[in-house]
Image (cartoon, rainbow, N blue to C red; front, side, top):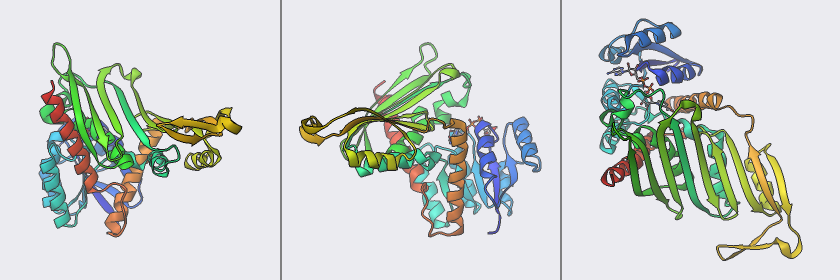
Length: 370
Ligand SMILES: NC(=O)c1ccc[n+]([C@@H]2O[C@H](COP(=O)([O-])OP(=O)(O)OC[C@H]3O[C@@H](n4cnc5c(N)ncnc54)[C@H](O)[C@@H]3O)[C@@H](O)[C@H]2O)c1
């Protein structure tokens, strides 16, 4: 395959955003567009200089399409990905991969049988901060990770009451439509988890699901709370991750994390490791300890501490630029696999399935508790 030729289905806000990134990757071109909102699809065709939009069935019949990028609402993902795989195409599908785990498994089995790609666009693991946090946990430089928190206070200004997002038959609900990104991140950090409890909050009057939350236990015993609410003006949009360790805690800002802060009590070697994990970070030393002051206890363990630090990393970072970088990085990684099957991808088919399995379990528990 010299050039990879894409056919895009769905020309909405996110489809356009992602395609503008995918098409910056060398040797990738867009050859056809299908979308039901004709004006948006025509605008997209103009943006990329391709022919006017065609029907999905016609797009899938085009021999020149190697890969189908699906950016339609979630309830269409399974049937469109199925049809694309049946037509022999590779698939990059917006998250979630499907609305049920059985559908996702069927798609993945089909893709494996035909040696095709079939991933959900879970681009979060391409963030350098994902890798930094993974190393922070794995190195145990701050001891065991004990607790996690993800708080998503999102705007709903762009989501009119009739938007598909609120229609659970179309979106799958908040855990499935949005939560999959964060289940995927935490699984990369802490391994497989089990959803222990979940709740949801319905908007008075309309009964729309506007809040969901759940608690997940991970293999090392860590408990993590996930909260998502879509309730406020967009300009208040705010997301924060927190992880508690035996020697301190970590905070990440934004749902596409761009800044990290670590508050910790550490010895000399641990300070050095922190600076290796977060190169170029600003390290404020808040207190130093000598002699018997170095001794401390936590969880009934002895700790040796030379200083209390407050580390800031990524102060200059910009969320939208990072978002663009992640989309390009995901595409480059998948393209490398298409060219060489021995290439180990950061995101593969299993991420689409596993994140959906967590989201489906949380959705079921939340429904049974409301
Ligand atoms: N990966 C991410 O970070 C991220 C971010 C935002 C949205 N998304 C996902 O992207 C997808 C699309 O979201 P959006 O915000 O762009 O939605 P949107 O409503 O703006 O766009 C959906 C598009 O699909 C088209 N469409 C609907 N039915 C169709 C059909 N039968 N055939 C062809 N096209 C059809 C619509 O005309 C529209 O252009 C969703 O799955 C969403 O979860 C992913």
